[in-house]
Image (tube, rainbow, N blue to C red; front, side, top):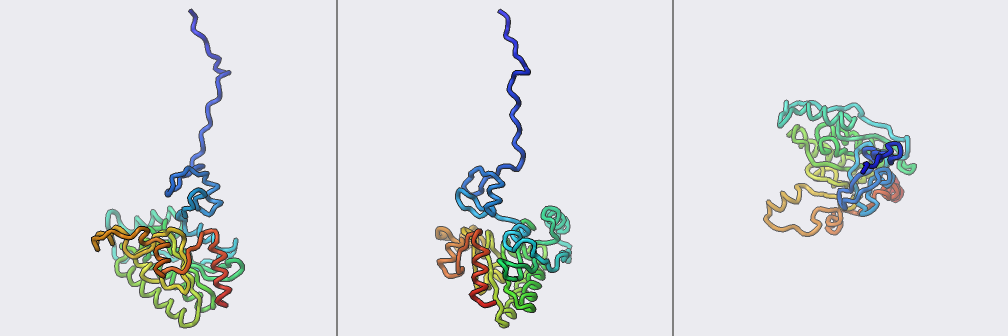
Amino acid sequence: MAQPTWDVAAAPATKRAVPDGLWMQCPACSETLFRKAVEQNLMVCPKCDYHMRIGGKQRVEQLLDPGTFEPLQEDLAPSDLLKFVDLKPYPERLEQAQRATGSPDGAQVGQGFIKGRRVVLAVLDFNFLAGSMGSVVGEKVTCAVEAALAERLPLIVVSCSGGARMQESGFSLMQMAKTSAALARLDSAGGLFISVLTDPTTGGVTASFAMLGDVIFAEPKALIGFAGPRVVRQTIRQELPEGFQTSEFLLDAGFVDRIVHRANLRSEISRIIDYSGN
């Protein structure tokens, strides 16, 4: 019996490949999401409301009125004063982070407008060496404080950091005192400082400027603390309360003034500025 022959021309067309990056998975609920829809939702999962981490430049674009950002100390870059080497030399780590983010270091600082209110804004970028605070980050945050003081403008700092930068050792730790002293001068002059805590805000950043705001906002379910939960658990040898070191836990303990959804952050900041008279 003759075998049937297939008409190649009549065969169904090959299924077109889905372009890379069109879809993404939520880290919290594992839902497969259309990336463009997530981006339009400010990188918040439309299914479970999980606030995903975003880069420093993206945060600036989300917060400030379009086209109003005027950067300060834009080209300030770190140096390897200690000739530090762990698994790789510190300059090599810096070069990789700079290529990945397009920024010389882990902070975006400048002036702009939030709903028509002129502000000084500093944003830490977790994509740059986990948003760690080295000499440049500390200097740029201090410059932001001094600009707010000189021009009598509200200061907004958005923290997203793993803490002090170990590759800079004592130089990094000194930034805690430096930024805190600058904020003390701003406070003495009656300036307004709004601190925004995002996931994660830990280590020396928490132990310095992040928790010194006149008003402290936090995004939902952000990890906020000094040492991480695992380290705390091992140190005190006790089980930790449910939700320990989350925004909600800190709100109940009185360390955070309000938990604010990312979509409402611009409105809440502008409202506080109006209430303060700055």
